[in-house]
Amino acid sequence: MSEERAPTASKESPPQERTQSLTDTKRSIALQATNLSRSFGDVTVLEDVSLSVGRGELAAVIGPNGSGKSTLMEALAGIRAPDRGTVTITSPTEATAERRAVGYLPQRPLFRRGFSTRDTLEFYARFVDDTAVDVAVTETLDRVGLSDVAGRTVGSLSGGMTRLLGLGQAILGHPSVLVLDEPGSGLDPAMVERLFSILRSLADDDTGIVVTSHNLEAVEKYADTVVLLDRGEVVLSGTSSDILASTESETLVEAFLTTVQGEERESTVRAGQSSEVNNS
Image (cartoon, rainbow, N blue to C red):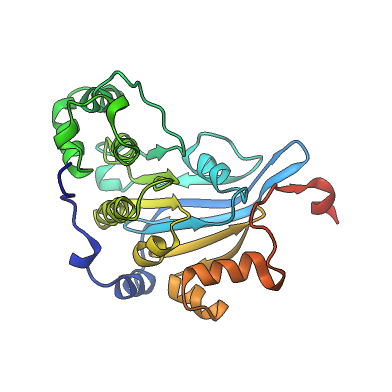
């Protein structure tokens, strides 16, 4: 498999400097979610969650298993409507006709195993712009580093390659906003690094990106802002530096454990909140 061609973070300004510049300058908002709430029966999964993502911003949502991250991603992408709250996607006015609004990658993307990598992207590209499929697919294969395996069937791809294929499907049509649910799940450290470097380059091309991830080292290195979701609520948000300072932690992993486990070191598997808990 060829080496990733997308720019890596080492070629950009250091994460701390980039985060500071994005924080200090007024960005146009790409995605705005306000007071999102969602319940399944008597279990509350999201409770008044609000966040915004600017153009050119890479925002990471972290949290324990079962904290509501996937439900939040579905709401942001328009896959599942919230019970309450609103999601607004703002496309850049100068490119509204050329860019799709949202690209979405679910946690478990499914593709036809007998299709080739190129065939798969061509199938999805026709839903976005039927007039320039070949060009769009070639550019996308190159962007995600799959040009050398374009002719291989999906069933023969490694897990990492399949994740990159999912990312390729999501970025077809140059969406203004990317919503990615655990794109690095199950990947080795080298592939995680590669994936996040691609996301960084996409954000640097003026795409607003929100991604869920348990790879906290990559999040700390590449994300401009971090949102910690626990029991369906936002408990911390800000730059990695902000979060480390507020929790008096050395790393984002330490901040995560301090916040979601506390002194009792409780389980980090969440099962939502019952209506009895919410009303107490």
